[in-house]
Length: 116
Image (cartoon, rainbow, N blue to C red; front, side):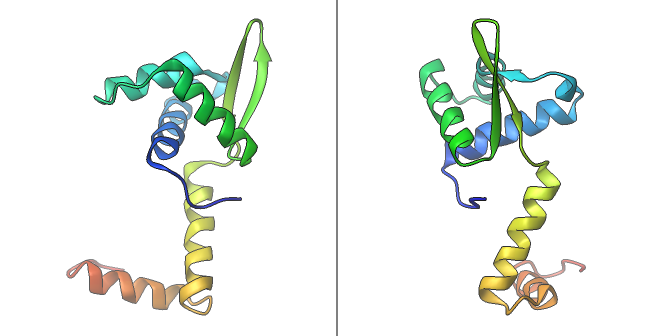
């Protein structure tokens, strides 16, 4: 699973997760719904751009896609929490010899006053 994404990839993943967390997880999500969510945040994107990036996220195994009538619908492969947990573990492994506590200490230095 890839842990680095572009800005639009992050916007799309966050939009999908937000819709799934708000109860839309009972159905798959269309490109139009993601586009509407992103455009409501003040970023105006083209349908074709969002569709292309969503298809790339399918290739990266971050979204699942299925045909629904004439359109494709999408669903996240992992929840936001699972993805974050995997990313934290990978970061701890790469830079802190798999010691999450050392990672947390480094974060405390970046955010004085933060309680771990």
